Amino acid sequence: MALIVQKYGGTSMGSVERIQHVAAKVAGFIARGDQVVVVVSAMSGETDRLTKMAREINPRGSKREYDQILATGEQVTISLLALALETQGVKARSYTGWQVPIHTDAAHQKARIQKIDPERLMADCRLGIVPVVAGFQGLTGEGSVTTLGRGGSDTTGVALAAALKADECQIYTDVDGVYTTDPRVEPKARRLDRITFEEMLELASLGSKVLQIRSVEFAGKYKVPLRVLSTFKDGPGTLITLEEHHVEDPLISGIAFNRDEAQLTVTGVPDRPGIAAAILGPVGEANVEVDMIVQNVAADGTTDFTFTVHKNDYDRGLELMQGIAAELGAKGVRGATDIAKVSVVGVGMRSHAGIASQMFKALAAAGINIRMISTSEIKISVVIEEMYLELAVRTLHKAFGLDIATV
Ligand code: ADP
Ligand code: ASP
Ligand code: MG
Image 1 (cartoon, protein in one colour):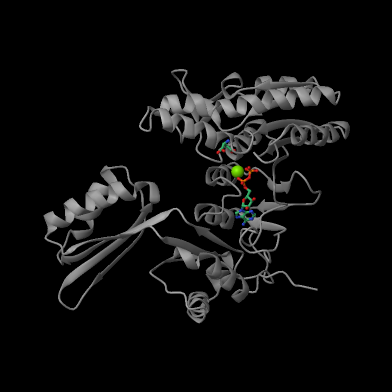
Image 2: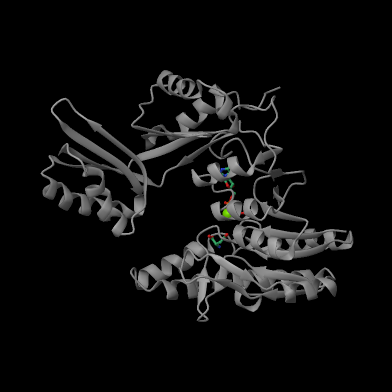
């Protein structure tokens, strides 16, 4: 008998039939003697629909009110699943985030879980009742509803598993595990039996939305055994492990990509100390996050300063840079939103040289131009033109020997 937290995502909760399927699955675990706490997402598309409505009414409305409406999606699916479990002869009780309660800070739309009181859920489990908890939401000290950022139900699942000291946190979704890259882009992607927390964290941070970044951080910090599995197909899924890789494991574990960034360049900046601070200071003050940065001095003694921001912050960034360019006596400002970032990730990189040149050669052979490069110990990222994204992913997937063997 095990205590398992199971999180079911939006596609898994996407229709009455699918909710009934999830109920049957949970009932199977209960029949086996396990204790199960379920966390659910809203029906797929619902959070987008709610956001769109709120934006139509007030695009700059208060984040507190956005959270109040966004959290309703999960309130529907908890009760539907509890009702479906009842029809399977399983006792169930639904909980919103604030009924658990799940306490968060007050950073609306990206709140962090601070404390979970697991007592009510434990009491249910002891009585053979399945608690069905709304993902993605919590409560501030002042009693306002918060949400945890898109994809946040993963984090609710992992945080509950930590609070309950569960034997495993299972993330059920529409793919049967973590793949070498998004199988929607590369059908030859392979499911990984296991992946280290460190690599999973990089992949999630670099754009693989199969797990929310914070859920991986949380699982690593509290050592929660975490597994990604399919709701619709039986199988072992992918285990996210603390273990390092074995010698025979591939150098590269996966390829991530991100279409959400935009590029800004201030050209012809007179080169003198303090340029980076003068440019990036106001960006930080405007709460705009910067990702990659490149600065290079030309022969005429001026500097081109390039950085990337989230596409949502592009207009704001461009406006800021136009002001700064004038102040600094720079030549001008250029920007691009048709860019994408592609990254190769693997702990094997630590002990092997030459991965970067292998990556650049493969991209060059495919005729793909690299605009920016950044590296860390276990990843190499490049910014390219967005139209070449899928080609780049497939090219690198093949170049690093990740393609599934065809029979
Ligand atoms: P859920 O609604 O269950 O939370 P998500 O859409 O958030 O599901 O995450 C699952 C999706 O993540 C898959 O359908 C897949 O397209 C995408 N994905 C991106 N990168 C990967 C990867 N490396 N492995 C598996 N799935 C990935
Ligand atoms: N429903 C929320 C979203 O779509 C949370 C989640 O599904 O994890 O982002
Ligand atoms: Mg998700």
